[in-house]
Amino acid sequence: MDPLAALWFWFGPTAVLFVPAFAAGSAGRSFRAGLQAGIWAGIAALPLAYALWLHEALRLYAINGRLLWFVGGAPEGENLSAALFWALQFTPLLGLPFAAIGAAIGAGAAGPPAAQAQHAVTTAKP
Image 1 (cartoon, rainbow, N blue to C red):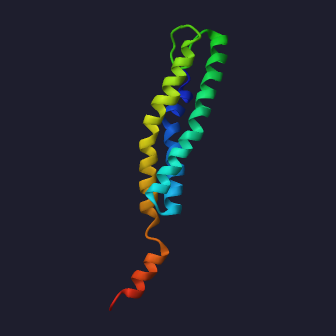
Image 2 (image 1 turned 45 degrees about the vertical axis):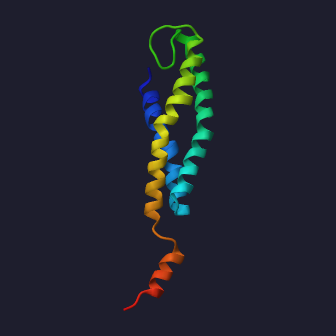
């Protein structure tokens, strides 16, 4: 198995779901907005990962007769079940907590909205 593919498999969902959730959470100053952005990023990215998995798995199977993720020989149809499990079932479970973490950090890093900050300054009594 290619070490770069393994790194992308483990750290890809982190980057793909954390970064949009953090950006939307800090821009919208809302955990909910960040979480929605992370979920939509997953909805957009996971079918692409599934399609790329199948394409690369079939290409490698034609070259050396092995599966993409596992080293041992197996029937060509095993690529489909492996892609379904890893790309569409396991990866969302791995990545969605990072979307929630990114949304929470983004919402917390943004600080209070400007209207609330202005109201706190004008109502403070010396």
